[in-house]
Image (tube, rainbow, N blue to C red):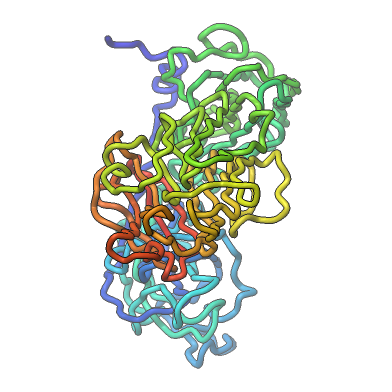
Length: 574
C-alpha cells in the first residue's frame, strides 16, 4: 500500500528541500610502524567544512581515548617565527608540546580496537566548523593504562609544513607531531587514520546528529538537553512527574510543536539550508500538532510550562518545535527534539531474593519490556540457582553442556554449573532503587542497572563457595559478568560440582558454535558470525577439578556490548 506523506513533510520538501547531511571520509596511508600515546593531525579547509569525528589506527585491545583541538596553527609553507618555543628539540613541534594552547573536545572509555590494519572509530562528537582557508589541529591520545610506548600507530618523519599527507577538494591533511601523553616529547610524524567531515558549517549540531536548543527556541523535559550527539531522552516511571518546558526569546513568532507516539527521534532526518536539523519522524502517520490536528497551526509563540504526570502504563512520546523565523536562512528554526519514555515502576519487591534451594528458578517481572537481550526487550527473566539468568522459560538444569547452551536452551548468560544456595550463600536481585553498600565486583550502581548477585553460593556437595554478579544495563543493553575472580575451583567429581560454562548465548533463537573463547584480561573480540555464542567451557571429565581457562588467567570482569550492526555482542575482558 502506498501511503501519502503528512502535510508537514510536503511542506518541508516543497519550501525547504530536505538536505540530508552527508559525511565524507578521508583516510591517510596506513603504513606507519611506530606507536605512541598521542598524535596530531593538521587540517586545512579548502571549502567550508565541519569536522565530525576521527578514526585512528590502534593496537589490539581496549583503550581510553581523548580528542583535543586548537585553532593556533603554524603558517604552512614557511619556517616558524624565531620566537616560537622549541618543542622536543624540533621547532616544527612547538605548538604540539604546550597543553595550554589546546582544548579538550571529549573522551571515550573502553574503545575496542578493530586491529591496526584498519582505523578504529573514536566515538567523540567533534562537530567543529572550519571555514574555507582556515586551519585546525587535532590531538588524538590514549589515556589510562597502556603498554609503553602507547597504542596509537603513526608514521615517523615527514614535515608539518610539507606536502599534504591526504587531500580532497574540501580539505588537506597535514603532518603533526606524536609522543607521550599529554603532549610530551613530540616528534614530527604523520597521522594514520580517517577524518570524517561534512560540507558546510554545521557547527555544534554536526552531521547526522540532533538539533540543539537555542536562546531563541528551546524545548525540554525535566531540563534534559542534548549536546547534539545523542537524543534528549527523559525516562520516568508510571505516575511520575515530567515537566515539559517551552521557552525562548522569539516570543510572538509563528510556531507549533509536532508530536508522535511510539516513534523515536531520528538522527539527522533532514537539514534546512540554515543548518537546522529535523529529528521528529514526520513520516509517522500518527503525527499530530499541539495546535490540533494533523496540520501545523502556526500561532504566535508564547513560552509555557506543563507538569505532566506519567500514565500508569508504558508510553513513548517524541516532540519537536518548529518556528517561522525570518532571521534564519531558510526561515525555519527548530528546537531540539525530546523523548519521554514512561515505564511502570520497578517491582516494589526489589531487592528480591532469588532461588533459595537446590535446582530452583525464580521469575523476576518488570511490567514493560525493560531488559534488552540480543536485540529483544523482555519484561521478565528467570534466575536459576545454577548460576545463570534465562530469558524465556525457567530452566533448573544443573549439568552444563555446550550443545544445550548453544542450540537447545533459551537465551541465557552467567556461570552455569551445579550450585546450591543455603543460609550462608544467597542469590539476590537488585535495582538502583535499592541502596548498594558498595560497588559489586567493580560495577558501580547506575541508573537503569539490574543486578543478579550470587554471594558465597557453594558448589553442590562441597563447601567451596563462589561470588559473582550478572548485570543488565537497561539503557545501553550492556551485560556484565563481574567479580569472577571470586569463583573457586569446581570439584567436577561425581556428586560434587560439575562441568561449567561461562558466557552468553542466544540459544535456540539462532546461536551458533564457533568454539570456546578465551576471555583473557585485556583482550577483546567480535564473534563470527555475530550471533555466535560467546563462552568458555570447563570439562571436568578431561581436566578434573578446576575452572574455565579464562578464570585461571585472572579474568575478573567480562563486558558484553551490543553490536551496532547486528543483534550480537562484542566483548572485552579485564
